[in-house]
Amino acid sequence: MKKKTIAITAAGVVIAGAITAFTLLNNTLGNNVEIESVIPTQETGASNGTNTADAAAAPAGAAVTAEQLNGAWNIADTSKVYWSVTTSKETVNFVDPAVTGTWNVNLDDASAMTGEGTVEMSALDSGNAQRDEHVKGADFLSVTEFPQSTFTVKSFSELPAEWTEGTAVPVQLQGMMTVKSTEKEVTFDAQAVYSGRQLMLSGTTTVTFEDFGMANPHSIVLDTENNLEVRLELVLSK
Image (cartoon, rainbow, N blue to C red; front, side, top):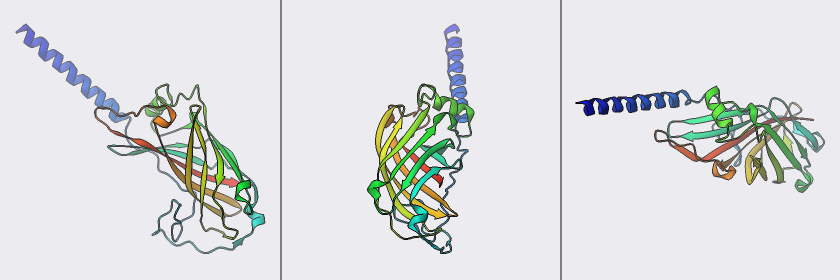
């Protein structure tokens, strides 16, 4: 009888522990961040862009000259970088508004263009403090040791010589992403738009946890895809 009582008590402890673990896990779930594109809605999506073909039509604008586009552009403080993780339950987005960098545009010579960006990882936010603390900790991003992530463009696809204000232009950015001091070659498929004396750039690439020395955070109750989507939503000014 005593053994039976002990067994029942032990089972109760296990069940209580499982419920507590599940409750704690549930408290860290849920997407609280919606991705906001800087690209105005287009009538038709470009092949390398992030807009959909059934979006509402955008009015045609004036012709944009090379003089307006060429030169050094700086990433404005309204820019954001998003990281998206997909689990068996949902996709969770993280946003980081602490982005700085430059894009030197040269429509006459794509090989002469340069670009770079830096993201302060301490500003990463999913809208859940407990989850953010865990992601920034030693198990994953180790933000204290590696406070910044960077992307340096090695090459741009050729851009058209003629632009129309408010109309998206497809562009690919190939370069090196560095997270936790680990480098990974990536390609961003993107769109660029000139509007109101600003350049907007919206693009995505896919990396994995393993690319930067991190383990997939799956658990016995939740599967996590290996792929992570990184999305640039940048506003640039001269």
